[in-house]
Length: 455
Image 1 (cartoon, one colour):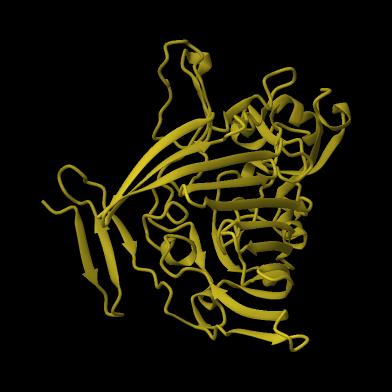
Image 2 (cartoon, helix red, strand yellow):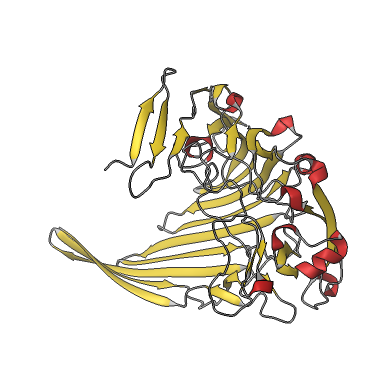
């Protein structure tokens, strides 16, 4: 029994047919799609250094390069062209269900994708499925051929860096560098089944809660809801972002590093990175208010949706610091080393499930899709962060020699200060609830004994 059949067309392409057999009588044909046919790129990478004063103690360095998105990394334009890709052929959907008769079974005609209200006859209420393309062979995502081939069209980024390095005293140097990075060739997805006029704007008021900025009570506007007639209808078309407006993501950062390699064997290193990544797609959101998901070029671009009004991300400057040192105690051969790192806390969200009745007060109707609530983040990007995470680890070891053989016995102490810094929080907001209750903390202080034998 064969459920899968390939048929070559006169064009040289292949159709894939599934079904038409005893246990799968319905036949579905997936037409072959042209994928990435050829990217041509020039990726220059260069660097230069100059002895500023001619004495070998001060150097200025410059580097610049272009880097490309991974070609076959199960992302972007390379994998989503597969018929089975979820973005092309939806493989699952959701629908609201009210168990009106309390028998814990959906008493609706589940093959009927439209909304059904059978409560008057002893049945249940089942809303329309979330995607009307479910079960259809026609891909809901089409690609602009211009993003599949040509010169300089592959997503990538440019990086430029300038560094000044100076010898402070013999075997001790200080390095200060600046880096700028900007991404290129973003793509966006336009649902051609809808227009701007198909999205109704509305706003909500944050609940009163002393944990929110200003105690809450502020208005969040710029939210959208698709009109019921266009709900769950998708005809997505992926093309270049500049066709709709400006989209940029730029990183600017400073690095400071101090390195010391002293005559007595003591080695020290300390450094910090301070910078900010800014993303803006406000022009595009004004034309595509219902776009969901994100943009190509990896995961660095924050996803946006009709219920995320934040189209300009400037979460603030953050600093990461590290330090490390090692020393071998002479004569007794004891090895000592330590490492310290300090990282900014994770960005916080307050994901509030706004009841549908509350949304309807501003929207003028119930939200589409028979949803019971709409989740909105009550915090702007970077408005709040968790506590800073500081961690100190150290090691002590002893080298033992037995003729030509050598053994090293080491004891590692992780999180030596036994910090309980919070790594993850409950970010679901409920007034008076357990918002920001820790869900993951830094692993408690622990020790590891290691024996290494070299022979």
